[in-house]
Image (cartoon, rainbow, N blue to C red; front, side):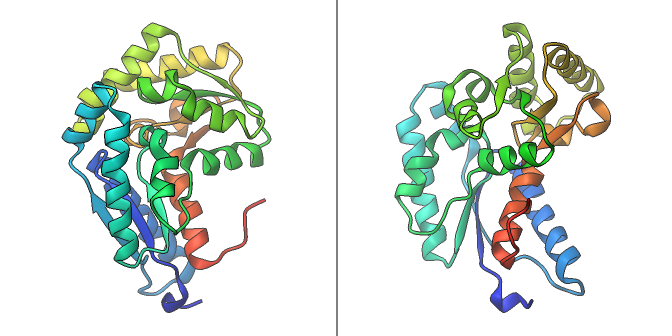
Length: 239
């Protein structure tokens, strides 16, 4: 396998750049692990201004946010991207609009996550993410379409999880007390019947790892990048 056969990965990032940096790092680490030597990932990155996107989220202007991402995706395709990642869970709410604007495949983050859960032999998972991801149907239904049962935290826990994402993680702030809050939320999801927990916000992996949970965790950023590298290098589908 040589780099000139690898497909170019388009990354639609900046939401937040903290997690987009992890996307770029992981893609290059995985390609180096698989190909060795000086190999690195073939990547194009479009980084939007998250302040603009967050304002549209808060105002419920999802159509306008989708238009912004669709335009950025078209730019990535024009620049030579051969497959696309939206480097955020929440903005998969507009994934269909983005896909409709381009001719290259969009690798849906929830699909990559669901496939990993199924490979692990689990059927019921808890979901952590922004309030939009936990409370709206677009993400939970996508996981459920794979035959999974999805549990979400209580209203108070959802508020804590959401606040920590936007006020801390998206700004590069990692606090031990927030890590403990997440651990407690995960424990309550496990008590409610979750066999595993989806870290359904790309920033959560900056704070939480498998060591913080008594049930398996599914790190969506890593799983998304693994699926992209598989597709870029022409690796067979995982079973």
